[in-house]
Each structure stands twice: as structure tokens, then as C-alpha cells.
Length: 472
Image (cartoon, rainbow, N blue to C red):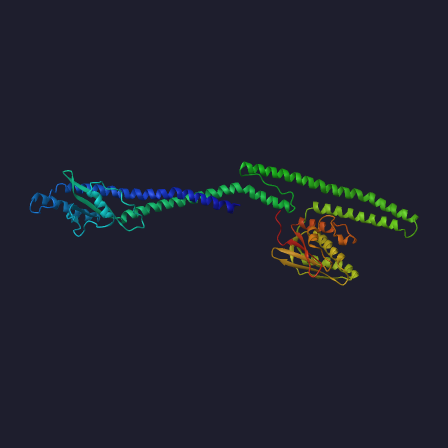
């Protein structure tokens, strides 16, 4: 859940930072350019004021007014000094067809004939104040042109033009953007750290609840959620979950106790009843079918009670996990069942290499006895029952395959349920609790039992136990 929630928060935070950072970067660029433009307007205004004292008209020659020549020389020196110090081209140009320069620096520079420079010059000829030029961005290589009119006796007689390089301005904009970017990155990292802490704080109770739920589903009914941190709603949910788990455990404990007590209390009356049936059989003729049938059903009922008691004990008892050689233990069980297999004419084969796992030896032995007994019970003479032990990554498996009739897909889904028996095997001795007991014994130690088809016919039972110690 955290991996799905964090990207959403990161995208939202990035969108907010971009929504703040982009306008700030644009505003910074505009402010830097505005500073340059205002400075150039002040410069052009100063040069325009100097040019007003040069009263020569476009039609007069240079020798007509000596004082005018002196002022023009002063203006020329000012422009040349301005260009040498700042590297900015500047000039004052008459308002005539040829746009003759009154003074310019460098001497080879004239009025731009196209682009923004021409537009600024034409605007100034109309007597308009300089306007803001188009924004120059750091990746653009261009120049900044500002033009101001020179007004004499209410008429525009000349235009002052400055043509500035933009390298320094673009560098300042870029440095400002880098500072903004660094601030954005720092804010993003800070927000990311806050998001990690926040999601961890919010989702920690959910993770603990998920782990505890899985533990209870795996059979560790005493697992509980530690109510320590998180939002109030999740803490309340954890407390409610613990209360529910306590109630479920109490109900299951009462159910197990009832089954165990009922099985135990019924055994004595049943034993007395079977004894009385045997005494009654002594007074009846030899070979009475009814008394034999009653005796058989009584023994079957006694077996069911014994199995119920075993099931209750298996579900209630805690496993004594030990590092055990599963291969050696399985080989012992195969050897114990070999005489019965020989009597039935079934070949019982065991492949049991040394493989260690964390199991309860008694529980695993009882489970293997139930599985092998079930395999021999349904395998006809002349067929094989194979038992194979093998490591499987973090687990160890014991696979028991038989040559019996097997089960259908629908029956495979129910095999192992309490008291369930296939309709095709109702006449075979059994209570329907053997595999249920096996599953309870294996699950208590963190293992599992799975059932599948065996080709060409038969059943494949896989007992899986962990090779590493299960976490309590």
C-alpha cells in the first residue's frame, strides 16, 4: 500500500512545487530584465538631454555653429566612454531619411534596419516612451535595444538608441533559476521525508494488522495487534480486531473442549455397551448376523470417538519444533508400514535422502502415518505407493503417491474436510477424520498438506514443512 500511496503524494507535491516555482522563475526573469531596461532608459534619457543642446538641424553643415560642434564632440566622447566601459552600443540619430548619426559609438554602428531595434526606433520617432521589449530567456542569444526620442521645441529631432548585450542578464537569470531549483529540490526532499514519515505512521498499524491477520489465518490464534501508534481510527480498529480475535479464540476453544469432553465422556458408556453386547451374544445362537452387525457398528462408533479426541488434541496442542532429519523419520514410517503393504500385495517404496527441517517429530510421524495408511487403504494389489523426500528451496516436501482410483476435481476440493469420504469409498473402513488430523498436526508447525491428481491414476499428497524455524 505504501508503494501505491507514495507516488501519488510525490506527484501532488511535485505539482504544487512546480505551480509555485514556474511563476517565480518567470517573475525573476522579468524582474532581472526590467532592471536592465530601466537602467537603459535612464541612460538614453541622459544622452537625450545632452543631445538637446546640439541644435544643428539636418540641413545645416558642421561649420555653421562652432558651439554646436563642441557639444557634439562632448556627446561623442560620452558615448565612446559609455561603450568602452559597459560594452553597450549607443548612438543619437537624426530624424531624416538617411537617419544620419549625430554621435555614435562605435563609429561603425548604425540604426538597426530590422527586428526589434527598428521597431523601437520607429516608436521613438513618434514621440512615444520606451516600452518593455520581449522577454529574453537564458537559452536565447540576443541583444536588448532601447530607444528614446530627443525632443527640441516640442518636435522629435533625433532618437537615442542603446543596443545592450544580454549575456550578463541571462547569467543572473540562470543563477536565480538555479537557486530556485535548489530550493525546489530541498523542499521536495523535505516533503518526501515528511511523506515517508506520515505514510509510515499511518500505514504501520495496517501492516501490523495484516501480519496478525495472516498469522491467525495460519493457525496462530494467540497473535494480537499491538495498539501503539497511528491515527485514532486505526488504533480503535486494532482494539476491535483484538476483541474479535479473543472472541473467536474463545469460541474455538469451547468447541475443542466440547469435542474432547464429549468424546471422552462417551467412550466409557460405549465401552460398557459393547461389553453388554458381547455378553448378550453368548446367549444367542452362533453366527447371529444381527449381533455381528451391532458389534461392528459399535466398534466403528468407538473409532470415530477416538479420532474426534485425537483431532481435538491435535488442534489444541502446540508444536514442539525441532531441527529434524525428515528423510530418516520418513524412512522409519515407510519401514513400519511395509509389512501391511506386503500383506495387501502393494509395493511400498521410499526415497528418503537426508534433509533437515523444523518440525514436531511426533506430529509429522502421526501425519505421515495417516497419509500412508490412506494410500495403502485405497491402492489395490499389484500397484505401487511411493514416498519421496526432497528439499524444495526454503521448504522440505514429502510426496506420497498411490496407484488407487484417485478423486475427481470436485472431490479434491473437499478432501481433508472433517467426516468427508468419497461416495465411491463408503464401504471402506474409516471415519473420515484421518486427513483432517494430519492437516491440523502439520499446520500447527507452520506446514501444509496439498492434494492433486497422480498420472495415470491415483492421488498425490504433498506434505510441506519449513526448513527454517517459523516465526512465532
